[in-house]
Length: 108
Image 1 (tube, rainbow, N blue to C red):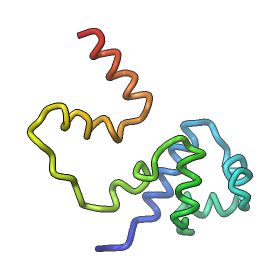
Image 2 (tube, rainbow, N blue to C red; image 1 turned 90 degrees about the horizontal axis):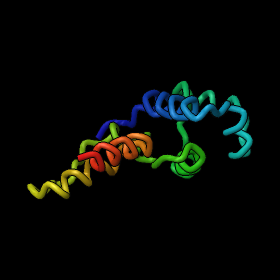
Image 3 (tube, rainbow, N blue to C red; image 1 turned 120 degrees about the vertical axis):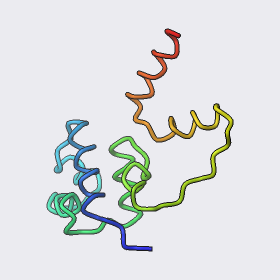
Image 4 (tube, rainbow, N blue to C red; image 1 turned 30 degrees about the vertical axis):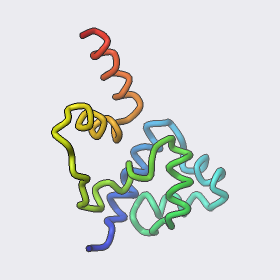
């Protein structure tokens, strides 16, 4: 197993934070850390602890897996059952995309 790509994780944190319109200062204030620490995490100069990553995910309204899903290669075995395959795909979609998919399904 290789080391996690903290630059990629930081980039995803930044993208999610910006998509919500949050400033680094806002996130830092909630976490009770210096805004420069958030900047360092987003640029890959600092590696967040698991505890901090969980708190960041909570603030940014997403799962920790949203940030780290590219960092591991395990994929659960999928059944040929279409329902299970659909649920597996939906599990990691953003809330906004889930709403779009639901509208499409309701139209059908």
